[in-house]
Image 1 (cartoon, rainbow, N blue to C red):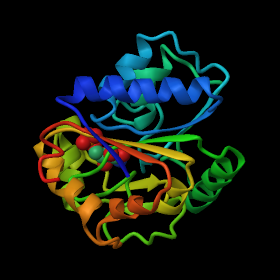
Image 2 (cartoon, rainbow, N blue to C red):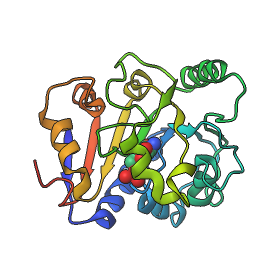
Image 3 (cartoon, rainbow, N blue to C red):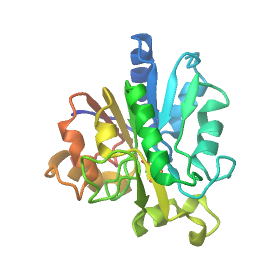
Image 4 (tube, rainbow, N blue to C red):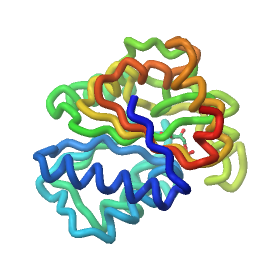
Length: 233
Ligand code: GLP
């Protein structure tokens, strides 16, 4: 694991931007994207740059079940606001949280990931060590699947909704096996709330109750931490 500690999320996002620019220059054309607050400054850097994704594919990690693309809180809306409206990709994929047959939607998404192997996957990490929406105890062999969100994740994400009852309780997420199949992974974590998960991810045993611990086994992973997130290393 290549761990880079920086002063704050601004410096960290500049570093992440440099890494993305370099892989793009070297021919990467399939980008796995994440939502949440961790990549926000990185997306700002990308919006303000001259990088051109019009010949690239983006594949997002996850989406809430029950929210349509147009919903204000959907990850589709998030991605349009943060990146796609300014930096459109040739094609952008996000799971359809409104699919009538969610199992078929998961299968369709796996086929997309197979068709377009991810060159670089951007990741955040949940306070409980989840990646994508792969909650603790998700099998490391999982591909795209439907997830029951844990109370801690619902609680952590309620800040984006008017009230807790509005936070969806299910999501459709790329699996851990799919994430691990990316050629390169770039994980970003800011703030003290992430420090324990980061410590367990890096130093703890590789175990399914800490989903991010599997990343110890990835051949090409860069982890960018601010001082607070890296304080227990
Ligand atoms: C959500 C997302 C994850 C994200 C995590 C952390 O659960 N599904 O992809 O990494 O939250 O979010 P944040 O970056 O806001 O801390």
